[in-house]
Amino acid sequence: MTLLDELTARTEEMARATLDLCLVESPSEDVGRLAEAAEHTAELGTRLLGRAPEWITEQDRPALYWSPAPGGVLLLGHLDTVWPVGTLARWPKPLRTRTTLSCPGVFDMKAGVVQGLYAMAALGSPAGCGMLLTTDEEIGSPVSRPLIEKAAARAGAVLVLEASADGALKTGRKGVSQYVVRVSGRAAHAGLEPEKGVNAFLELAEQARTVASFGSGGLTVTPTLAAAGTTTNTVPAEAHFHVDARATTRAEQDALHTRMATLSPVLTGALVTVDGGPNRPPMEADQARHLLDLARLTARDLGLGDIRAVRVGGASDGNFTAGIGIPTLDGLGAVGAHAHAEGEYAVIADMPRRAALVAGLVARLLPQAAAA
Image (cartoon, rainbow, N blue to C red; front, side, top):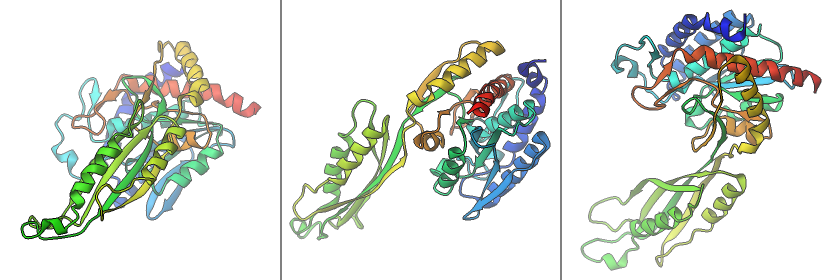
């Protein structure tokens, strides 16, 4: 029996396990619910793999770690979602149809987590393959980043179980930088003597235009959230705006950081300061070329057809692992659509196919890891 045959025979089991996990709502900021989701996943993984994960808690936030042998393959995922508690109660029913599962977090990325566990189980839970599941990816992994980088540094390759892009794997992701530009001016009465003020709102507008002009080619620099002023009859003395920037290369990201640090005021008497910087390094496509070649060979051997690869603007924890030099291939999780949107779904029939792809790719990588 092939890997695909074995996993296809377990399709219903995978679908039920995914639905059960999605019924445990797990928003990023609710550590109690995240602990419930981690406990549920730990029980599932222990049953499937015959070994319990290490339970790691940092700042009350849980992570699960099935450690691979040094130089092995690390599967990477997260259990947190963007959906607040209570979303499930108002989610359109049914949660399952003949062909799909539609629940908060199913596409991003609980189906991928389940598929990864079943992929490891289909290989007999080899010592060379492990998995790390964190619980703060959707908020930038502020707690988990050191853990992710430490685990990845022990591995020879990282396979990220994030959702696919219309079935395609993700070989490149833009790096993310986040800034807050703060403007100080001088307050004055807007009706009696506005000329005595320094309008922080007007300075903010000038700075936002300047910052937006930094975007070019693959680099996007977008002013987003903004605020200014205190009352309707006062010249604003304070203002600020947030900036979301996405870069395709580290050089591009570093150059933008230099430009942001040199912003200067336009209005006489105004003061401009900039906080923030790079949050995630770019996952550059060249680092994944060998893994992509192996994935395509695996797909052909399994009869899964051609595998497409894309570069995307969104970031994942794969940015961190690629950023420290570990070959990383992303988008190996669910096939479906509408991440972070009402009605997100995963295609049931593709669950065993993606699990088989992960299992087959791990099987190809492990002999290489052993030889190294």
